Image 1: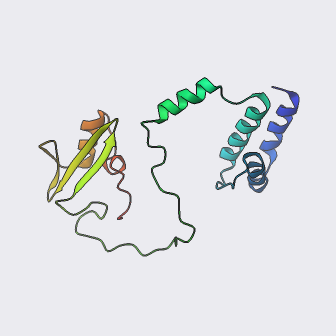
Image 2: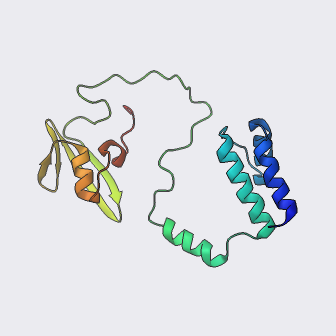
Image 3: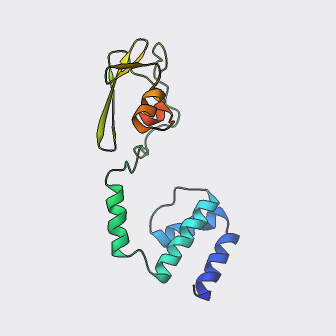
Length: 158
């Protein structure tokens, strides 16, 4: 690493969040949406090093693209600029508002498999077996403990 780059990286540590935001926008050429100082320092440092010493090799880019094929890169849609932060919550149904009414299906793709779960009055049905919780189904599918609402992407009462 050259001394010029080392000096730039040390200067990042002393910058304020506002200065880091401007530096981020200058280096990346896009609007900065973070106000987390540690994150900004690391991202800017990474970009400055990539510019100074060379970016990823073509082989590394191909491998990253290969690994990302089956992954859910973004799990939430970008916020709409006109969307109100204080929108009224939908009316709650009986039971947990994150769950659809009994008789509906929850679907999720996991490692190339389609997971379909029927919501029933007193739990859930998956592959002919009854479960009391989504977490139990998620554990059956993944083999590890995982929050069922997160696994099935059931955030809030939408």
